[in-house]
Length: 174
Image 1 (spheres, rainbow, N blue to C red):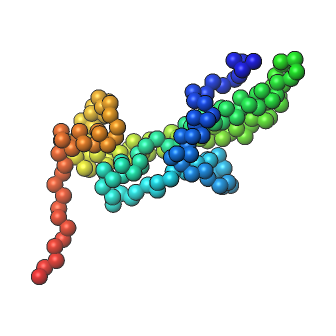
Image 2: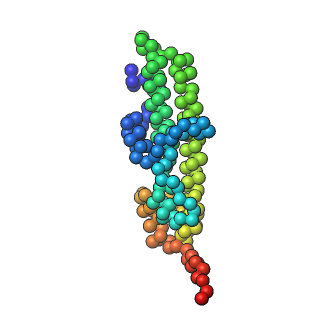
Image 3: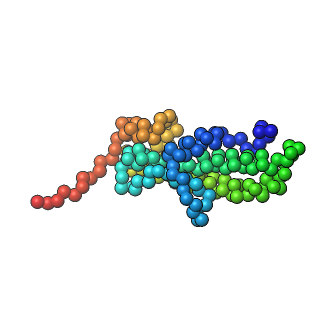
């Protein structure tokens, strides 16, 4: 019966919840962002902080949206099992009405994931271009050829391209 479920989540519910509890706080209900269930434990640093500090803080890491989508899939599978009758047939109208909020939540989480990832990748590229003597084309080529973490990539680019010379802070006159 379980092989006929409508969704096939990649990860188990326990694994997702464990990973989310390690890196994120469970959010209280928010009527304006009701579809989001988790928020990062570390607040993102501002642009005033160094790029290396922002990377180490996890500001450019993937958000919880994909894991929350997987939880939605598990929930919809559970509701599919509940909508199954004694004879093994599924009451599709019951399942459809029971999962309407889950489907809306999944859709909004996918939209948030797309926006957030695009913003993070754009910010990361711009920060690398401001920090190192490299062009957009060089950055794109290097990103495609890297296999390490963001911090390892940072140190590779620092060695390969070097940093821009920054003016010293204004020294007070004596």
